[in-house]
Amino acid sequence: MAAREPSRCLQRALLRPSQPHKYQQFAFSKRNAFGQAAAAVDVEAESSLATPVPESVIKSYNPVARAKAQNKLPRSRYQFRSPKYDRGPLHPHRPPPPADPSSRLFIPGPFSLPRVQQTYESTIASDILTLCYVHRPPGFQPPPKAPRLRSWDDSSPYHKNRPLRGPRGGDVLRLLRKPITFRNLPKVERITIHSYVKYAATEGSQWLHVAGMAVQAISNVRVETFKSKTSVGPWGIVPGRDTVAVKAELYREDMHHFLGKLVDVVLPKIKEWKGVKGSSGDSSGNITFGLEPEEMALFPEIEVNYDMYPVKMIPGCHITLHTSATTDKDARLLLSALGIPFYGKFVN
Image (cartoon, rainbow, N blue to C red; front, side, top):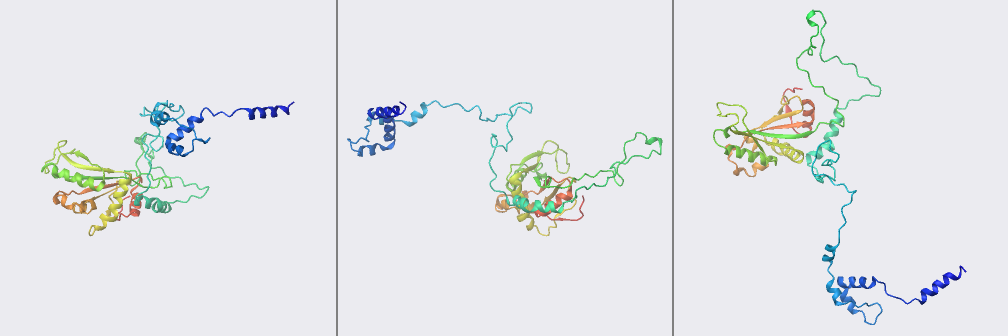
């Protein structure tokens, strides 16, 4: 009995008349209306493969209107949507950091690094790590250090409850320097270009405009203006009244491009330039040096448009290199590797 059932089903399938599928006509009309209507005309009318398509169907086919008529599905409830505002550390839904691709502030890149940054990452960083490496074998215990502040010997009753004395040989405590590892290698963090224009208070604001144009041209950063905080009698400067200084802060790519331009183009052109003084640091890893107006004119952006600037109004500037080093010794080591020479007595 079980063997006869498949044969009966097969007979019924063979005796059933072939009927076109309910979506067959729509599929052919869609394909023909999409650009193959001319190919359908070439097929013979008596052929069983040709399906006649009414003209009204072809004219009524409008994919744009059909797409607009469709109801779009809502956004997935599992898709992360970065909040527009950061409502504080106690809020349960905070935006991700700008480095996260899902952040609204994410900027892809960089796709190419400046030459100075490439040199630092490929050569200088490993060299500084090698020069400053301190080998500590397993089991090494450093000898105990003497206290930085000395106690009193209690030889007098006035010593009781007195604060500890300063270190022997000086009143100022030197900064404690942590050993340099691959985690705290010194690097340039930012560059500050500052120009003080004393004639802006007495001879007009055109001096300040020229200084701002020059600093903005060499730094590729919009400058900030500052008013005087102290009075200078011979220069006629009153605190808070006159704008006498411009400043530009350089970060990231602008900083590296400016540093490469300064080391490769400007400093070699200065005649009989010894270098940066060894005492120019602030004991925290920041080095400052100045450029005269004639040295400021050696930048390519000013040199190529030299006729645009009044010669006597080209300002000088102070350049401060802010590094992540904690001592001036490490900062000089980094800047010497980048190409800035030092001379004179080094003050650590």
